[in-house]
Image 1 (tube, rainbow, N blue to C red):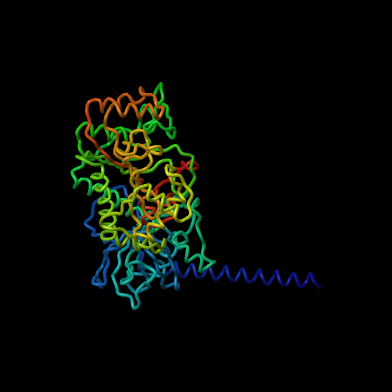
Image 2 (image 1 turned 120 degrees about the vertical axis):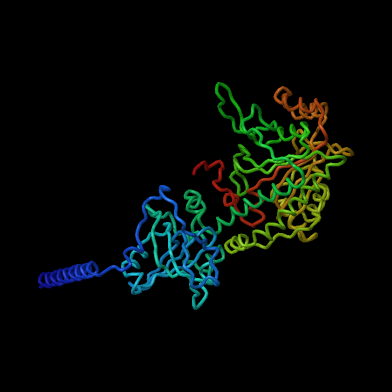
Length: 517
């Protein structure tokens, strides 16, 4: 009895499958017989080998406005996602840089066919398409897109570069804020390692696009300000014969039949330029640090924004100029890159930094006193730890209402050999750090410009004089008093935006555990 029942079930299933196959065959036959009136309006383009030039005018997604309603435009963008509504209609989300817009394909009698709609829905996400479309005003603004006041009614769609492999993650999942994930446990998170292992994909998020536009802006503003101050941009060697600051945190490399090092700063060379009467110099270049630190704010390779300037009477001339430079950068970021800041803050919420036109200057001993008054235990000449720096930043914000300040007169014992001692108390030095949101973004000082004093300082640090022979010779030829400093680009961007990990503000980060991609 059970066997007969099973045979009936199998026969029933067989007939069902035969019916489904027959229906699919009939449907395919009907579709094949249909006249595809949109056949010339969709497909896959040939590989662009720069074979021809056309007079096609292309419109960026960010240029689309409601005033363009009714116009026909050509756009090139990635398909971030597609959503079929039926066999006759589908939506595409297009992305170009930091902008997204909605496109719609709807079957009509002349241009868009059912096959064209089916083709559009089959385009793999992240493929690049060229689209001709009419700009229309949607009945309701498209809140899910950055360009929400218009919609694109597609007339032609051609794939110009198709994704060939499964995506490592959905781009939307990499754009959720921490708050959104906390509110909705069903949202997928993409871990930092996964993102960094697939960095090209990760960099496509509009947030990352905005982060690196802001990073480029910091470099642009740094260059703008110093150029207007009469400084000369320089390019110093990164392969050097000795540890550039007499330290051990350097990468040793093979150099033909000998050995060399990767520069951990342009310090010695930018000072040589001052001795060569350049007056004011700056450089934007890679810096290498062989520090086995796996913290959220350390990298083994980063971009250094370095400067060095001669002065007439007092190193505060340079320190104050640097303070004004940062104010110039902060103000112009908010004015000229407001769109990018808005995008970043949507995923990584943070308050805009507080800063004064005339930056606050505290002396190191005053900072120590402030920390002690709030329960911190530290000696007069102890170097400040990272937790103490953060505590100080909080106390300074509470007391002075600023996130940006200068800390002056560090103990000489915690600074490099070329730092000028304080003239009234040799236990301290003419050196300074700049802080943002309670963390150091720049370290600098007046340098020792007298050759005899420099030799004494080198000996005091136990560094062989012969290893710095060329450096010392520059000062034996006479050198004006000067000061400067070095800024970590990734740190500035990280702290300014309130992002928690420096790897997110480094294009392709390098740390002790990561050398790829």
